[in-house]
Image (cartoon, rainbow, N blue to C red; front, side, top):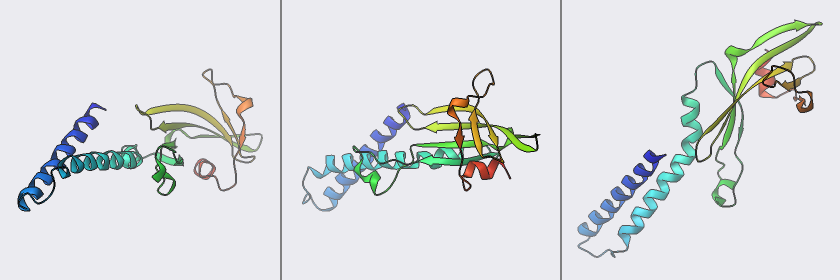
Length: 168
């Protein structure tokens, strides 16, 4: 996080330098207030770029056996532009190397790990083991003791990306 603050400062100084250069080229015809405006716009543009690039940056650093199965891009009141141009703030990744399919009572049951990434002031990652019945599409999380949590049972839709990836 400190590196982003330093980078924003450097971008602000660089943009202020561009404004100084433009004032010099125009023989001081441009007003002095253009210097802090350039610095502020440059820092704001850097921050917006960094926030929109978060999802691409995180997914590029994932291992090859990882597949993004869901993402969230809600609009924010304090960022009104996110209603027009959505910004991904969370996503879920399936570790395809962790899929363990089994046949129980003529039904295919798969156990696997999902990782949820959330963009906050410090990025958060939560790992959760799940069991998916490929025939009934029932998805059940497992607790720390590797027991099924029946209260959090979900039924996935036929076109759900997680179902398509796990039950190939």
